[in-house]
Length: 561
Image 1 (cartoon, rainbow, N blue to C red):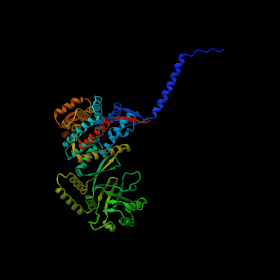
Image 2: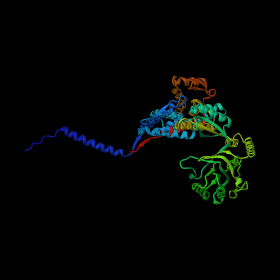
Image 3: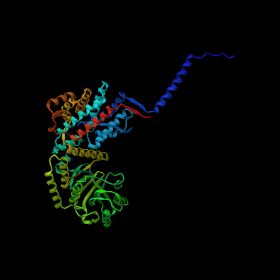
Image 4: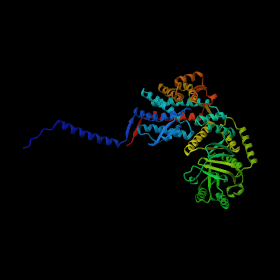
């Protein structure tokens, strides 16, 4: 007879705990397969933490101090970075998914700014960080997100108007040198571009080439650049962003090329030539059977062909084609001249040393037009420029651009380096400098070092007065803090001085004064040549406010898987 031993209460408890643990594990697995929803205020805190992580190294590059950032590429290799846009490009993802979301939002803004202006990434990152931190404080105190956004929009409109009122046109070589030096930190590059600017003028077109030795060099060639697009992607070499045609024949057609009969004469002329020179066709429009036939001949290798449709606008295409004809010695084929593409002869073709075709336009170098024709064309454009009304800025700018093309505003910047890596870095810096100069010519210059943004603070008083409630006034206060942050960050990067004390000293001196972060002095920014491009500062401000507005009005974050 077996005796029953009573069950140990500890065994019962242990079994219950195991069953409960299994149930919890099963529940967690089920939940893990569903999207996870995180609501405010924790959602905004997660986004802000990711923005902080990426904004921190970007902010270190603001100003001339240019703190170096080490980036680990692999476990055994790292690289030294000193440019904010390069840092943003290198950061592909963060390890934490919650941190990564905010960081990638900031990265997207940085890449768009770099693509548009070539600079302003660190400036925008510093302002975004300030805006979201100030917004978190006010939201935690009970402020309404829509009201904050309304106040922020009122403030940014006033700040943009104040920025534009400070702008001065880019006029001297000293200003060019200061602007390039501030954007790139490359003394040699700033000196070379300043010399090129002095020769070519502000409307110049500058292209880059590789130099077989270390250093920089430059030369000037007569020519011009026109905007347009390539009607067929197959015309560009595989993997290349452009096409270079050497000693091309050029057809200038103020017509819409649709039919095969319109393009057959130009193909026959090239095919009849033993050397078969490359052919560039610039027209008002190219489509249909005509485009198919031209593309087929190019793809089959019978003709090296470049096609460009001008994007000047219906009323300006004829002027652009006539300028090209004067530069290249060709004839504009149109009903106005009495010569159509169907009647094309060899004497109607233009010539040039080189045509550089890209998806955004064509640059003609070394046009072989007659000097007499070019001078006649120049006189006509100058007469139009004198008659242009002062208020018509777009017309005035277009006429200045035409003058630059006809007077030979083409410069070639030659870049050389010891290694491939150094060459790529110098080419990136040169492209950045050229974009900054282009933006400066369009939008003018403002005091650098964050001073232009400080000068916008008085304009926000009017925005505050027009606010409907206290929460909207809090939105204006967000931008007030953000406008001061770039100046404070530059002083912080310099070190050795207390940023609020320097800010107080600058305000006491006046609107023209700021902090020279190379010498550690409070100086007149215009006299010292510490300048920024108005378009870039305005673009960075818009981008920062746009991202902050999106974050402030975000109610939830959803993670999948």
